[in-house]
Image (cartoon, rainbow, N blue to C red; front, side, top):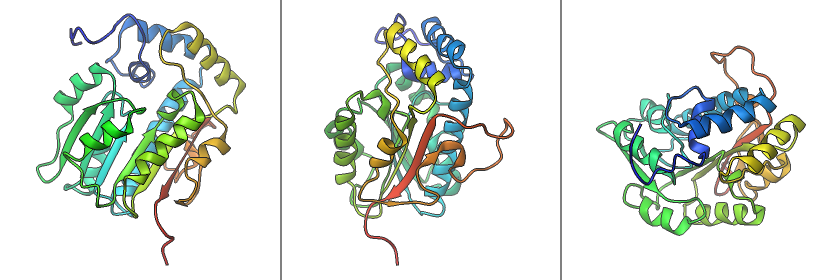
Length: 267
């Protein structure tokens, strides 16, 4: 682990807690304590972490393959694990260009060491907060051409913005800067499972970390208003173009996601 003095090891961070839930080692005792508290209240949290991550992989495969996207802006990327966005995209399209955004210095430490790129493509990292779209867009232009289609990925990050109107405005501002033919990909936790809601309530009350706000599936679907939603729609992550997983049959999880395209419908 890094001794970077900017890394606060006294307060859990969502990226490191998520890393713990996924079985990673890039976390601290305070993160493991917060993760274990969630898991004790809601054992299904591990399933949610695994299957939302698996949806991300399927989404990137769709975007780089069928949709033909060559540029990705992945905000709230978290700590590198297996099959990161750039790895999945560049296996299909070696010339794909990916910009990651996160606000945890530990993510930056690992990004520099692990987020390599194919020689044909490019991978970059921005240390910024999702609440600062202007800074994100300004720095993204170092790597991405914002006159060409971009896939904006907000996977599990908008729940960290507690004000729903602000979360929607962030999405709108980011998408407004991207041209027609760009895509928006989102998943987030929902308020549909009482056990999950209780686990999040306890996490928010006792961890000291930035709080997380699960939302209704309808509210998550509204992020895509005015866009062409890709089939099969906005639905539980386990049902978005499902494939076999290493963990057997997928259970229902309180996490909904989808993908949509900016611009007029295709003929």
